Length: 168
Image 1: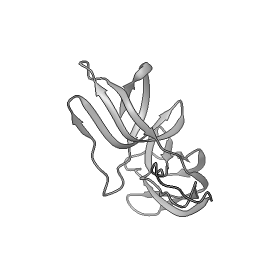
Image 2 (image 1 turned 90 degrees about the horizontal axis):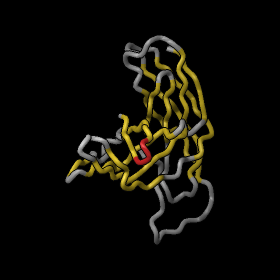
Image 3 (image 1 turned 180 degrees about the vertical axis):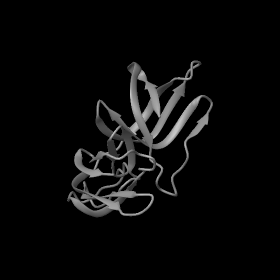
Image 4 (image 1 turned 30 degrees about the vertical axis):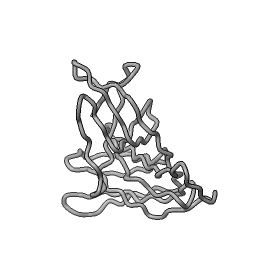
């Protein structure tokens, strides 16, 4: 999906919807509310919560509000190509959360040509919450890629900037 946002920039955005408990986007009174989403802005990944977009009479949207989430630190990215029909591709990621009191958010995947950009963020602490400041590792976050109908070729997967390749 492409959205026009303030300053007339075109941003590629993906809704984070792989989680079965994810809330849907709601359009009411000219405002589109999106619980979670990810964007590539000048090629850099970003993850947002509580996104509010205002529509105008031409059908364009202006960003009203969004809370940017912290991206997790990614240590390894491993691609698994299952020898099945149709072919199935998944990414196994390990890395670190900033503190043990946060959790991984639903991953978002944006495909542009042969590049899959996976954006992986963490929840934030509430205003009254505190947590011991130590890095908390997470292991083997598995993310499926939608490769249905893609032509044979080499593809790159970038998870928060850490890259790996696979061939269909």
